Length: 155
Picture 1 (cartoon, one colour):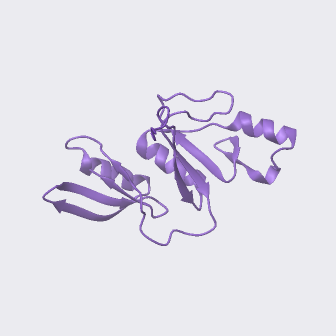
Picture 2 (cartoon, rainbow, N blue to C red; picture 1 turned 45 degrees about the horizontal axis):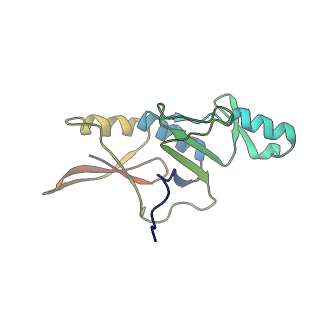
């Protein structure tokens, strides 16, 4: 029996967050991604009564879901009707509890040869912090934390 999927499996990385919109803004700027514009879908759901008013917020002048927002690669396809990305995406979802331990999964950013220090400085300007600098026989990188404390590495 073949246990492989029939084709590539579409996925998104979901990040628990206290403030999904602030996290989306940080990661969109950090990665050069775009925050998804779900405003047409949110408006439609509000008009139909399928989404209560308290489940929506204003995000950069347009209605958005209160508890989740995604960022997507600007070159990837998206569904024009819903604004949902169909390619590389990070989805930030509101959770009530704060982060308490080390991430079991993290992003590695690769800005290119000779650009690590400049990228670390740029990310600090966006609200990230340096946790430690690593220098091992296998390579060098900087371990950072986003504004909510999620670890990621810059190589």
